[in-house]
Length: 165
Image (tube, rainbow, N blue to C red; front, side):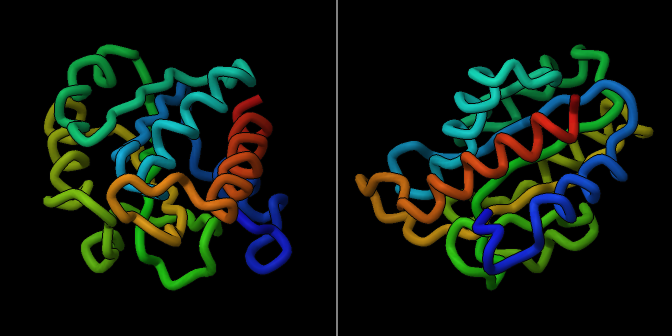
């Protein structure tokens, strides 16, 4: 998240805090071989280094493989992190309601995280779920994470750590 061009870090922190209920699990999706699409796994590394108070799941490109571990983590809230085309400058983050993600272009995986969300809800109907999408710059095969997204991830890791403190 580039706080100088988008919502302030205080606004994003407040938005996340407002949505959190009880214990939190963060499920990050992404392909580390495709540039900025690897932002989910990279964010989990950053959150682990900050000892963020949440159950952290690097779901890679197969989030469905983490359904049982997430559901058995006793969480009340699941935050899904993914790269997407959300029409913002690269590296900026936006909180999305689950109902809104059908119209978002997620970068390298089909189906969208909507199926993952539906499966989570099947396992626990009252689960509170929301998505934080980060605008990717490139998802080219073999590309590194862009400097814009890398900087945005540092800011997002700080925001999540603060919001979950």
